[in-house]
Amino acid sequence: MTRAPRIVVLAGGVGGSRFVLGVRGALRARGIDDTAAALTVVVNTGDDLWLSGVRLQPDVDSITYALAGVNDTERGWGREGDTERVNRELQEWDAGWPWFTLGDLDLGTHLARTGWLREGLTPTQVLERMSHRWPLGARLLPMTDAEVDTVVVLEDGTRMHFQEWWTRHRATLAPARFENPGIEHVRPAPGVTEAIAGADVVLIAPSNPVVSIGPILAVPGMRTALRDSGAAIVGVSPIIGGKVVRGMADVCLTAIGVETSAAAVAAHYGARSRDGVLDAWLIAEEDDALSAEVAGRGIRSLVTPLWMTDAARSAALAEAALGAAGL
Image (cartoon, rainbow, N blue to C red; front, side):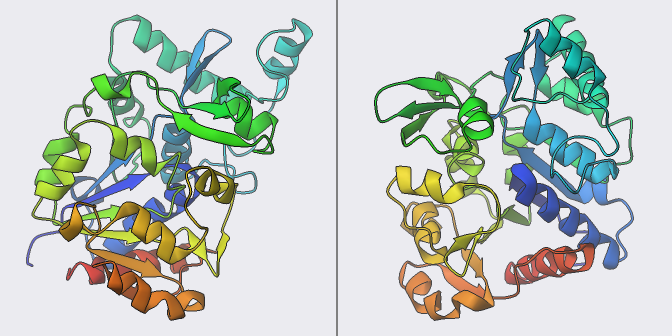
């Protein structure tokens, strides 16, 4: 291939942020300077919510901040060096959620976004405007312009926003299911299906399969776009050695009846040849014994180091994913 490959990544959360950074790093290592023309990231917006009158998009902001180099790498979310003066004042007014921290710099992002939304811009247009501030080296698209916030339904029937269940309760309340009310009536954001149709490879980041990648795939038309695309579709396991890398994805998987294993998550996504979405699946060296099981599902399995502990390892993982697609 003489031109730069056209890459689409489906991503959300910290794992998604690190992987997208790795893909951009792999492109730069190949001598591709205009990575923004080569790399499109379709971001989960199921985590979004309204809080204290402003619209928050946690996954969008995490990936934006990571690409801009201004993210808090210790916490995995928010801005580096942020302060919480406004958040403390909100708590004095008994406003918002005392267990959900809004940093001052982060709040500036939310205010700007909300103002643009109030002026009539769509989330896609807002994200495009946000991307002008920093040289991100990628085009970011929300999965949809509609509001389809994730709701957790507990075993006793109680319903709560995903962020309350995840951040306040740390996923300790047993979920019966996850819903995105109204998602069956929405459509992919402008440019999403076009990017998938024109891609050489679609990469599914090692994000939470249930609440990060799940909502993206649930948008009507998304699975069809993936199945119809001429691109190779390569996924990266978020499970290493039978354990989640970060967060509480194991609780989410258990709720939908999926074992916490690299092979089980591959089966959950399914082979594209069998009405699923995967052509190939990257698993960790610790899970080498599962290769045959993955292959038995009709998915090509490749064993490679998956730990993204620094920029070089993240780029190496991304390069392995591109290699799996023959690029």
